[in-house]
Length: 192
Image 1 (cartoon, rainbow, N blue to C red):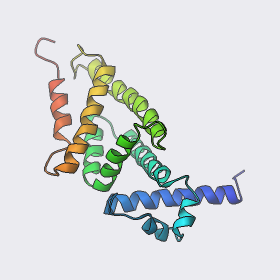
Image 2 (cartoon, rainbow, N blue to C red; image 1 turned 135 degrees about the vertical axis):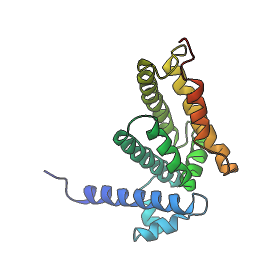
Image 3 (cartoon, one colour; image 1 turned 45 degrees about the vertical axis):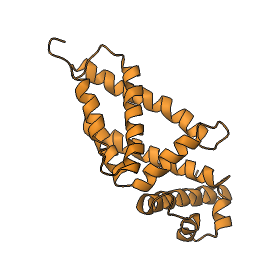
Image 4 (cartoon, rainbow, N blue to C red; image 1 turned 30 degrees about the vertical axis):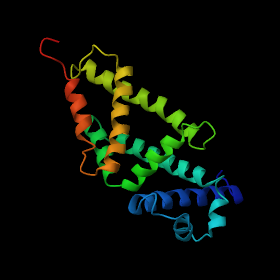
């Protein structure tokens, strides 16, 4: 039986708020968007909006969580290196979300920050998924095998996260090319 009552309505409204914030930040940017605009989109006052979250940072953290879940779902629908490139291309088309990610990941180094738990969970999960992908590429003979996939996963995530920061500062920087370059460096050498 489906849940009914205030809890179900509250969860639905919270989801509506998160999706509205995701869309607005993606279109208009993180720093240029006020939470009042998100509230208005959801027919709420600012205090009404904040009723659903512990703090502004909690709301922003939850927006990143939704962004990651959405990206993960899209990635499951695609296979191979192109899936990763497509996620990177989507990042370039949503600079506000890239800015939010970079800002919140830096703030999350503080264990007391609401985003800390999100990032503490995100990285091990992401490293595992990337390592599994790399292992498949190794097994198929498409990648060098002299560096364990778990270590390569850390390297690729560091490149992907780092290039986002560089891209925010200089939009002429390609976010795709460094990933492609690292993958080229990891291609099997003749005789491997």
